[in-house]
Image 1 (cartoon, one colour):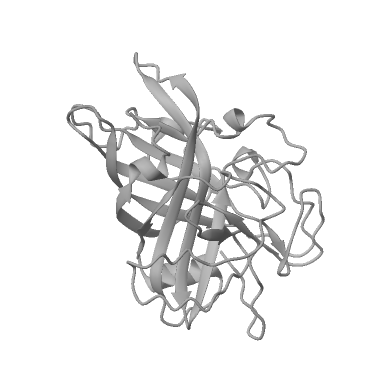
Image 2 (cartoon, one colour; image 1 turned 90 degrees about the vertical axis):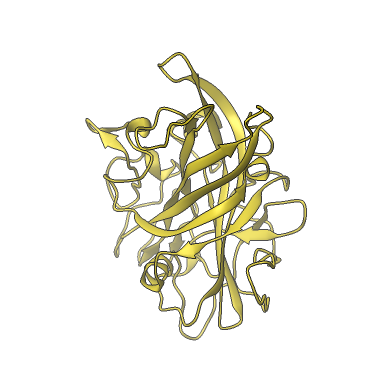
Length: 297
């Protein structure tokens, strides 16, 4: 989801993700660090930098991370927009908060969660981090609350493609958008780009969410990261303040799970239609209590 100039590495805009001190940057830019992590047991998300002026996501609390197993190197190169050398330490960090509860239409409850997802990897001694947010961007918007902005981001037992085993086996997916860049420079909502636009979104999928049998709450989860790059060319119109999953036409739309012309988020757990999302990688052993800030029961 990045563009790397052959001579210059564009520095990350970063924001604080967890109180234990790793910070993360906005997508579609370039972040680098001489962070020589030798293995996935080290926190690859330990790059430092300034707080993003675009969004304040979770006030520096909570979150957890897991190693990311790439589908293949070609997927990573497509995601970045440049050819990586020998990437290592691939990782995903997830930090979500409950925003609302909803009737699931079957006598139960769905739980709306939003927040931030970060993807990181190390290549040639540099660590690159992109952060994607599901929160309002702080600009004129067709939605007026985080609850509305995250209405498709649900923990639910009603997805047709999850393993439904007693006592409780939900799934989760959600949309998350990164910062958008014009020829390598971050854009603000309403800004027109006369050149090439780089940006995009990810869908976080959790298809195995384990819970203690005694009802004490969540334990670990497994899932996948899917990405979609904006394909805007020269002379693109101004970047909207509205999150891309609410945009129906043009280069900035990133919806999925469409049915009858609208997003039916529980029609599938895995993105299969709409915008052409590509699977980047999978992960296991995610600490759900950390990722969901102890709000899953």
